[in-house]
Image 1 (cartoon, helix red, strand yellow):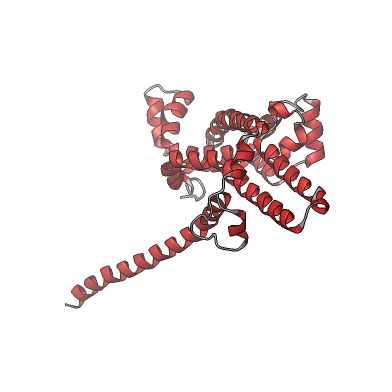
Image 2: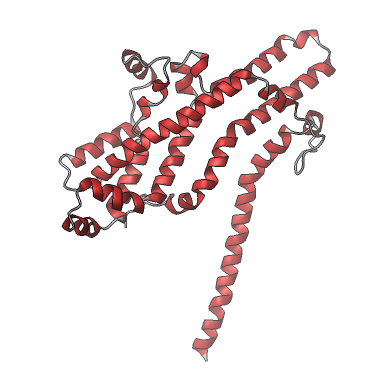
Length: 303
């Protein structure tokens, strides 16, 4: 009887724990999503309603003037095109280089494996700094070319370590040995065994690389001066800076009502900029979400 009562208590305890976890996850979800929601509804609300604190659940007084300003700006579309190209081709090249390198470093028979791993780890924690890196990029003839935003970060040490640890700990060596008995070489083992089994960790790497390219600002600001190949982030910063500068320069020539209205419109423009610049990455995430959730912890813990 005692054993039966204990078995009856366990489901109740499990339900209570699950309920607490669900409530905690809902609260965390609200904390994470609510700021994004505020930015979205603020970008299409009346600036006066935002300033008065009335916009906190639904938009008030629909106003899309900020989006009209952005969409009418030709630089925005140039930046979108360039950032998309850099993100797509940059991520593809990084995956093409990093994934085979991680697979090779996972092999304990690789000559000099320990020193190669230490070399990549060192570059992850230490760098030469902005000025030496600029001189290297300049001497290679990459300044003011799209390659300046792609080649210097072609190998991502952080993602390399994650993928190497995954290949080393999550795929049994017996599978490779069985494939070698059937006549498979290293290339076939990588393509037909390692890659199909590493889709979750590859999804994590793709998202990390894509975010890095899409959010690229400092490198573009330093290495690129030609507006035809400039990134979206630089153009967005330029648009908001120009709006703020125009507001400050004309502050002494307009009355307080017009000044307040201009300040509100500038703030509205900043909300719209956040939404516009976030859309592509938000659209990318659902396609890899299933693999991302599974792969985020893969390769980070040794079994």
